[in-house]
Image (cartoon, rainbow, N blue to C red; front, side):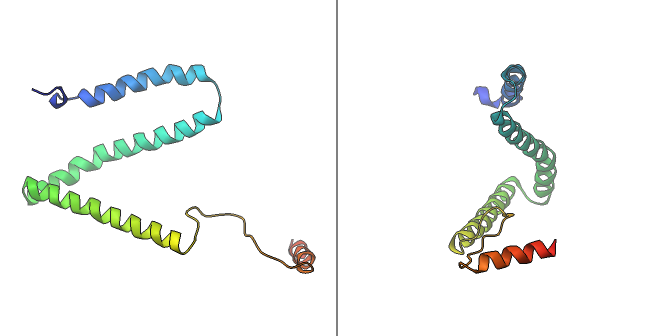
Length: 126
């Protein structure tokens, strides 16, 4: 009998890591790395919670309609669809040389005399 088949084995390791992380966070003090770490762990914990809520509902609904093998096939097809959509999106952004994140600033190439003209126009608008 494999130890991984016991119920709650993986969750107990995650729980131990969470309990060990809390004092480490408290002792480390403020740092920019902690902000990134908190954002990443918050996002991952949210995704785990969302999967724990949605997964059994959709899995149970699909299993009631079909058998277990078709459930796995449909979930694999859904995963493949997500990979294809993300690949097409990322490749199109790369080929069109568009940024993956929106930018607030607009870069404009101006000639020698046009820079002062643009600055004057922007100050008149305000």
